[in-house]
Length: 107
Image (tube, rainbow, N blue to C red):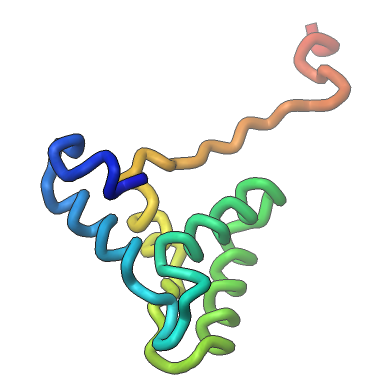
């Protein structure tokens, strides 16, 4: 998708270059299933979908980093993971929605 859009679609050229690099960078040497961008995207999606705390997410990143071969490209900090995705405008925002319509009952 990023390659189809092309560099001219991005306001800042280095954003396209960074995203293209992350798209082509293996998660570890010999990995063909996950690239750095796809791995971080899947992990952040799990975090947002399941409501994981930042602390839990960071612990998971550190554990996965230790499980993967040395020299892997998986970030170990949430900040670094967010930097990979935010140039694409893929910021997530958690919205609390009470299943029992809490707001209307307070009135």
